[in-house]
Image (cartoon, rainbow, N blue to C red; front, side, top):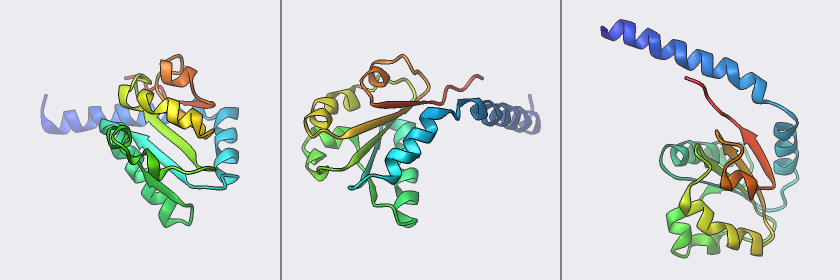
Length: 142
């Protein structure tokens, strides 16, 4: 397959994925917006790998539009950076698999601090999803 055909194939897959996301916007999405809007602290965004890259962009966009937010790398959180989280913060975890070990290791701290946890995942029955206050399902079919 040539590069033009490959590019068209990728764009078709991406377009279909975006179209399919429309059906995932449900009451949980609305609740997530309400929780984020009423957050008294900051929005702490976390994710590993590609989810982490997306999370960094989300945190940067929130911060640049006036919503206090920052990205916390889960591995660095395990090593002590959880001290950056404070009472009243909201945690937004991104994990395609919902099984990200580094985020799971932070759950006891998140719970002990009584922080709300919203998870964006492609696997709404995953361990992380089951331990979250709210789940946004972004499952993508190829």
